[in-house]
Image 1 (tube, one colour):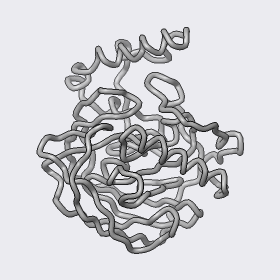
Image 2 (cartoon, rainbow, N blue to C red):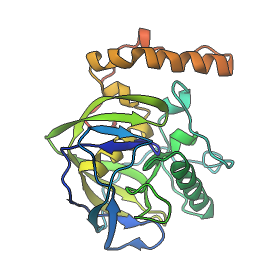
Image 3 (cartoon, rainbow, N blue to C red):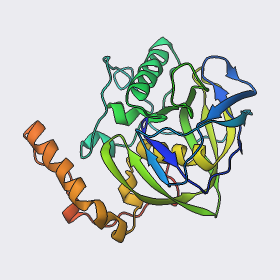
Length: 274
């Protein structure tokens, strides 16, 4: 989740989910798109794919935004093809800058992000996961090019979140083949901009809310294991150490962080602080 982060499966999600959304090319509008049906085994992974669930989507304009540091043209520079950044690369810990320019370069970046998302069998992806620290995420609940709706969120902010918490077995493309339980709010209300810069407000629940929160964390430099209990974290500690060793072997540099010396981080419930 995150990035095209990953895929979820849960028996707790309803067969049909109502939510507001928009299409990246046509702008704000009412539309119908499909999720893949969720299996009975809770899992959020980048390789599994769910069966079809119809989702009604509709966006409305909003204006609740907090200002942040603005991304420069160099911050938005990229070279194709994009590649997934893996833990413990420090890029994943940097807080992302706000996008203030909605031009052809941004549209090309979005296209490239969707391309790597589909190629890695994901349904969502954040810009930091491809090495670009700007406030941008993309996802398509169907996870198939040419099917469903391609969703783009620029400068997203969390407005409200539900008190009801839901436990999922999450995965992340920046943590290949690692899955573990993460508890998050069941629904969120967010403000964002679309690919053309238009502001809107949307309520998300179930799978879309889970995907959004995972990706939104990436924009704040928060990783999914930051939200795990110590008991759950212990179950993947060896896998995280293996990624740290892989980073050192690949770069010749010491790992920028080590799970064995990690201190418990305090993060906002359900999403990162903006």
